[in-house]
Length: 427
Image (tube, rainbow, N blue to C red; front, top):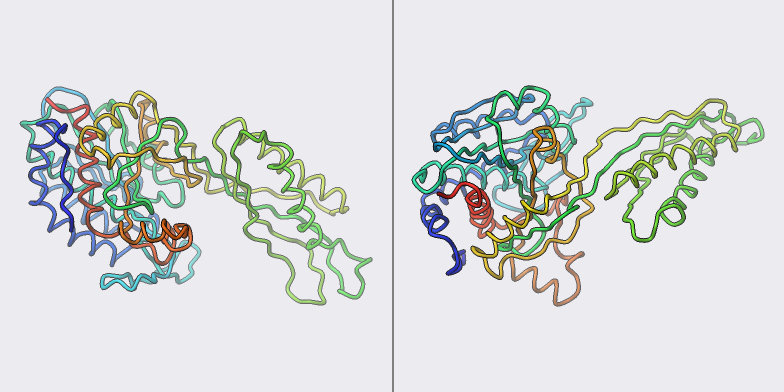
C-alpha cells in the first residue's frame, strides 16, 4: 500500500491528529472486512449498530442508540467551540455478491416483503462506517488539538430514502447538541486516494412512482371486447419520452426511466390492468414538480383516450431530496482538502444518484457539504481510462462486482473526515 501522506501545507493540527492513523489502521481494516462479510438490509442494521456503539464506547464517546430504529450517535466534547456533525450510512443492498473476495458476503435474509434475498455492501457503506469510526477515534485521543463538539452519526436505511427522516422524527434534535455544520462523504468508482468536492447541486432528487392503469379483460381472440392495458401501458411509455425531449428546457437535467411494466398472465388472455414503475431524477425543485405533473397529465389523458373503465392510481415512493452543497461550507472544506491532499483533491462532477443525508441538516437548520472519495485501484482505473472503457471495466456502486480496495481508500476517507472537521474545530 502506498502511504497516503499530507502535503507540506497541512496544518500542525491536521498532522498531529493524523500522525496516529497507524494506530487505528489495523482494527479499521479488520472491522471493514467484518462489516463487508456481514451486511444488513435497510432497517435491519442491528449487528452493525451494535458494533458501532461498542467501538464508540471504546473511543470514549457519549453514545445514543436506537434513534430511528437502528441509528447510533457518538458525541465527543472538547470544551467550548463549534459543533460538527459527520454522518455515515450503514445499510446494504439486496444484491448477490460477485467480487470473489475472501471476505465476500454470503448472507441471505428476508426482506420487508417476506422474500429471501442475498445481501451485499454493494454501495460502500461499510467504508463509510469504518472511516467515521476511525476519524472519531483519532479526534477523541487528540482533544488537545481541537475544541468544540464532534457528533458522529451512523444512519440506517439510506438506500430506501427514509433513514435520515426517521432519525429526525425519533428525537435526533433532542439527543445531540446544537450543531453548526453537517458533513458527509461517499466512496465512488474513482482512483483510490482522491477526494472530490463540488459547490451547489451535487446529487439529484429522486422519485419512484407506481402507476396502475385499468382495462377490460377478454379472450385474446376477441380484442374488440377488451380495453387492452398492455397497449395502454405501451402508449404511456412512448408518450412519457416527450416530457424530457419537449417539455424540459435543454439546460435542465432530467432522467425519466420506465423501469418495469407488469401486465397479463397468458398469451391469449387480455388482462384487466397493468402496473408501471417509473424513476425520476431532477436537479431543480420546480422542474421536479413540473415533470411529476406532466406524468400525471399524460397518464390520465392516455387512459381517457383508451376508454379505460377506471381512473388510474398513482403511488409515489422512495423519494430522495436534492443534495445541494452550501457554497461557504464547501469552500472551507475544499480549501482544507487542497492544503492537506494537494493534487489528490479534485472537483466532483454532478451525479444522478440520490441520497437522503440532506434531510438531517435541513431539519436541524444547518448548512452542509457532501464529497466523494475514490475507491478503485489506481492502476485498474488508469488502464480502463487509457482504453476508453471506464464505464465498462470499472464496477460502479450497486454492481455485484463493486469492491473498493481497502487501502488507500480507508486512510483517505479517515483523513478527509478529520481534515474537514478540523476546518471548524482546530484550536
